[in-house]
Length: 314
Image 1 (tube, rainbow, N blue to C red):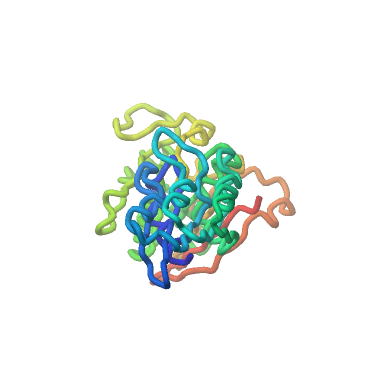
Image 2: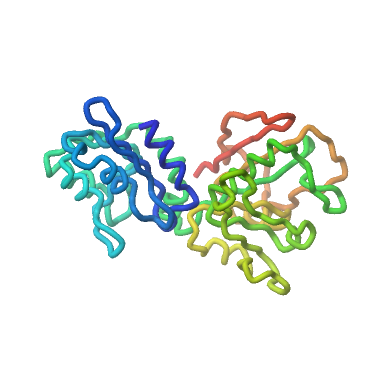
């Protein structure tokens, strides 16, 4: 399952509108098929792995990070039927698919065909990778990650608005990896005007994974390749599964005030800015309301900088 989870991570930000799933097929202790959801959502992971395994899928065990789909669409057959047709003997599932078109029907169909099904294996890890898909199902909007480069004293820019560069090279490389996992990267109009950011992926070998670019605010003067959002409600209506917001202060504060931020990444540099710019009003009326809202992940150190990750507790 660990290998299937690693494969699933390859498609995050590329598989929309489908979730990025990983599949590994093992026969007599040997991996005979590997797959992950391809760009645009097809082929599915199971279809890719079964094609690679061929006749060796018969009697094998398939490890999948999400319950195999049970519905046939114009884009391809149901994965549960594909596994049955290939003669797989056992299927191990990490996460349940709450899409109403499947929602347990995939596992039930496998069992009805005489296939042994084991579920709930490394579920939390699978659901973390499926965050965009699950947020879409549960809340009808994209999963929104807010990334901020901040100083030790919490400033995200100098008093005059300058913010290039707060963090070092290694932290910025990590930021580009986050971009490669997003469908859409967004900044506010103030940041666009002040910094003229490229908002692309500049990691060797991953340049083609640059996401769509969006700006929230005024539309005048934006290049044709930049998508315009009038406000955060328009952003929440975008069909993306994974949205990465990189600033600025007003956009970040408004998203936090509207409780639309699902994950927070703080790239903290060992510097003191002093009279710098901070987020501003996020709608917090009482300190008591701030507790219990964010779950912290282990801190990662990259060069002189610290990467702090927080998930919204809902």
